[in-house]
Image 1 (cartoon, rainbow, N blue to C red):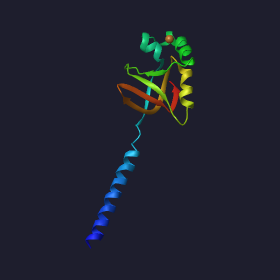
Image 2 (image 1 turned 90 degrees about the horizontal axis):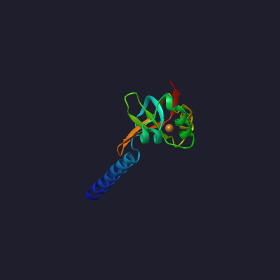
Image 3 (image 1 turned 45 degrees about the horizontal axis):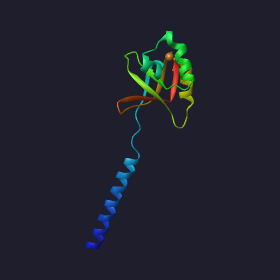
Image 4 (image 1 turned 45 degrees about the vertical axis):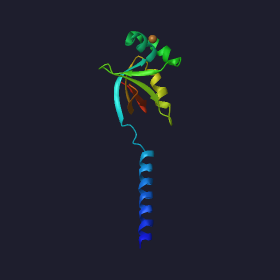
Length: 125
Ligand SMILES: [Cu+2]
């Protein structure tokens, strides 16, 4: 009887451990958000504060050359725009809106003091 109880206990602990590990491996993804703002070139904006309609051409040139993009909201909150690992289409599409107002949807994170927004969908405003 004691032996059966012991075996059951070991099995229960093993199942519990498996459950905890499975849960930990499947961390909930960041919640998807829709944010509006201007697509800025991070080099231009962070380095020199350059943005807006008067800076559209420069932002477009910088982003076309590979400069990293950000989304600057009307409240002045900046998100680094990141690419979806499985589908880069929306991220690449966002490049054409450099210096323009857009609506971007995707998971948003805050890590190491930096806000990011993954570009899963983008539309001009
Ligand atoms: Cu610029």
